[in-house]
Image 1 (tube, rainbow, N blue to C red):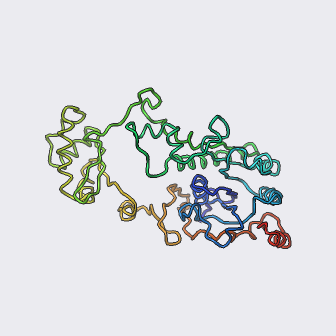
Image 2 (tube, helix red, strand yellow):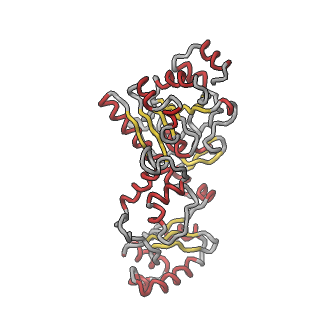
Length: 372
C-alpha cells in the first residue's frame, strides 16, 4: 500500500482546544506524525482534546512541563526534526515564554509554524477572549445565516472552518518549502475564516444582503414521526417532480409565486404529516425532487448513505466522523481515518525524545527532574 500524502511530516501540537484538535486530527488522518505536547501532571490519562475521542485519535503524546524554563532547551532540540508546529496560544504568549516562532525558526529554517487565534495576531481585537459564537458573530456569518436575530447555532462553525483553513495553509507552506527551501509563519484567524465563507453569498457584504427565505420549495417540513425533511426543490424541474410525486401536480405553477406561498406551504405541510420522514425520503428519492432527511445526533448512524460510505467510524468504541478526504492512489489504496484509541498522555515521550536525538541517560535525567 502506498504511503498517505503527509507521511513523513512531523507535527508538534501545542494545542489543547478544538481549533487545534480539528486541524491536527485531519493532518494525522492524512498521514502526518502528530505529537501532542502535554503536561506531566496529566500523565497516564487518555490524551483527549476537551474530552473528545474524535479530535484526539491518530496522534502520539509526550509530556513536557512548559512552565519550567528548562523546557526551552528541550523544545529547541525537538523542533529541529519537526516540519510543522500548531499552537493556539494568545498572540505573543509563546514568544514571551522563550519559545515562539523566532526561536524555532532559528533552530529549523524549514519549519512551518501555524498560530491559530480568534481574531489574528494583530488589530484591536487581537487579545480579546472569545468562543466560537464570538467569531461567528463578528465574522458576518451569523447575520448571514439568520437575519432575524436573536438566534445562535447549537454547534461550532468558525472553529472547524478555521481548522480547515489552517490545514490548507500548512499544506501550501509545505509545498512552498519544496521550492524555496524555507518554511513560514501562518497567522490563522477563526473569525476571518468564517468571513471567507461569505465568498459565495449573493451581495453578502451589502448594507441589505440577499437572504434565502423559507418558501414552499425551500423549507423544512415536519413528518408523522416528528422528524423533519428538508425540501430544496427550487428549480422548475425539481419542483415539478416534487408536486407530481406528492400527487399535487396542480401546484407546479405556484413556484416562486408569493401570493400563493402560504396556501402552497400549508398544503405540502399537511401531506408530509401523513408519513414518517424516512418513508418520504425513500418514496421521493427516485422522483427527481430534492428532499433530504434532517438528521440529528445518533440518527446519523442509521442513515443509509452514511452506512454505505462509511462516513462514521469507531475509535475506542466511540462513533466519530471519518476523514472526508477520500484520496485514492494509482495502486487503489486510499487515505483512511485513524481509528485506534487515543494514546495515554506521555505514552510516546521516550520514543519522541529518542527520535530527536536524546540519549537514554538524558531522557532519564529529564524524568528525574520532573520535566517530562
